[in-house]
Image (cartoon, rainbow, N blue to C red; front, side, top):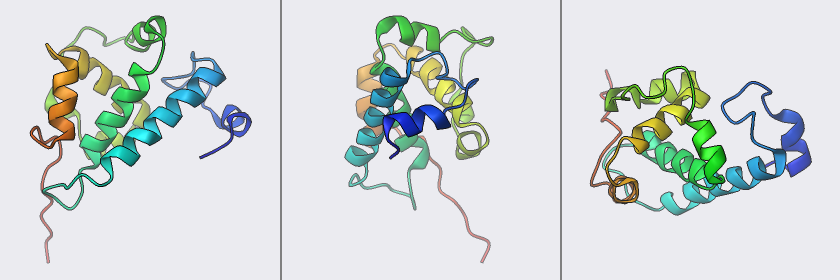
Length: 136
């Protein structure tokens, strides 16, 4: 992980978190990485559960922001439109990490009980990933 000052210089000036002050952003990234550390030993029924693990990490990152910044993070042109489960994919994660983070937050806010949903994703009771089929 980068130091706070190095991270400040590397940050995207127009990314999803660009409005977050450097110190708060750094702490949110620490929370994101801690979420990965917590999820690392959790078994996955597939080769990996990258979508679920990133879902949890981004959700925790945004939840660690002050409420006013959480609200601002949720404000985007497509805000208020439902985010389907299909939009939360490995392809979307790799093509647009910022867009994936915003979709995670919007999707989570659509759940009646966000904490319960996170618990079920973390426990692998809800699977966001899909099995990959090799063409060997």
